[in-house]
Image 1: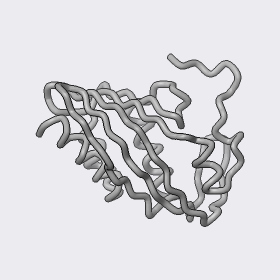
Image 2: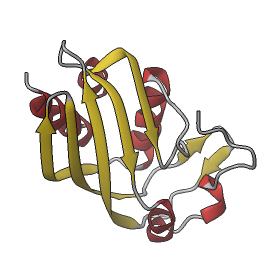
Image 3: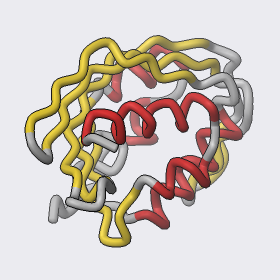
Image 4: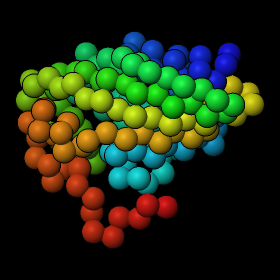
Length: 151
């Protein structure tokens, strides 16, 4: 499987809500950094927890790849994510009740693929404030905490 095919399959598994196939695409030493993690590194276990949380809160979540460019072990893509917040969002800080509001959000994601064809790094960016506004939740819920480390 090429790097581009790996990333295309990754987004498809998200849209199909298939956590096992999605996790199988991640290298054991996988690290993700995103707007949601405020740039802090998250490994496979944290990604699995996030996937399960979003699967319950956003059961109709879909990822549409708009553009994808691959060169060597790097893949860059633009995705449009859509979903409706119909299930409880269970966060470590507490539960956010569903608002039944839909969103459409552009996402930019950068991947590095290892020689075995597994994803070792993912850096993903989106406008968290726009997402919060669209689904109708308090923008302070995902705001960086004072002293949040970006390491």
